[in-house]
Length: 110
Length: 152
Image 1 (cartoon, rainbow over the protein chains, first blue to last red):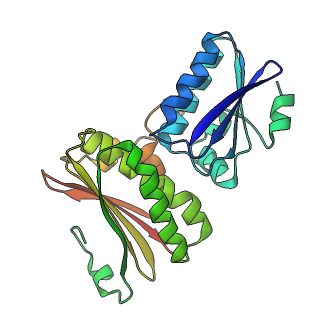
Image 2: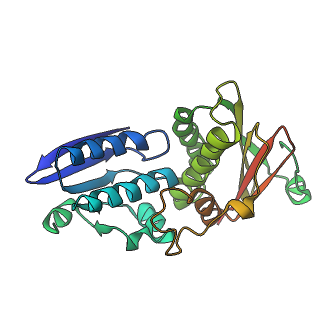
Image 3: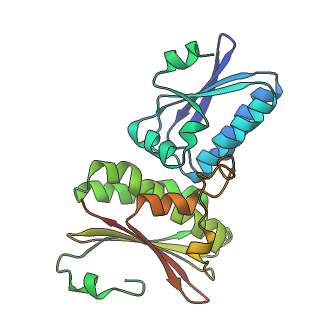
């Protein structure tokens, strides 16, 4: 399980490699907050390699979304598998986040 | 069974303990245990959706609660995880050394407008949404959360 961040134009793209759960969600949060502190405003989190997310992982995404918005930035999510989509629908977080089917569409949406 | 075995399950002639393990109270233990349980579920031919979503998410929530709330992260305290499979259901039991909690009182609706942007409060909701039955029982020294998922 790890997270990698790279710049694509002016967008910070975060790849989540594995599950986003209680044991690692603080690492993701800190990495994104570090970039936000450096002045980055546009973030895309790509879940193409993620099978599931637990409640603490969802909570971190909610928290990051708020903090990024407070700094005038934007957060997009991409590549959720059907199970992840179900989690977002169950919790109605699909109404809170902008979710794209592919990384390319997410990048174009900024 | 840890406790409270139901008559219905006792009568089931094809009950099998698929998993029984004690782990220390460390959240780093969660993912490997969940992987092992879901692997067992695949071997037992549970539906793919249950193996990929219902079981891992609900079990992760139960383990997280047991480690962080029940045992308050004390590494000298343990969590017991059991998975019992029958022809009709998968039953997961997660036992910690805490004093327990009121399942209904602690479950909030994270989808209500006032709760949607909360960082916490989705764990019990997810467990109850993804499982057919969630029960809690125990005494002052042990607390058990039992998750039952009917086999489709």
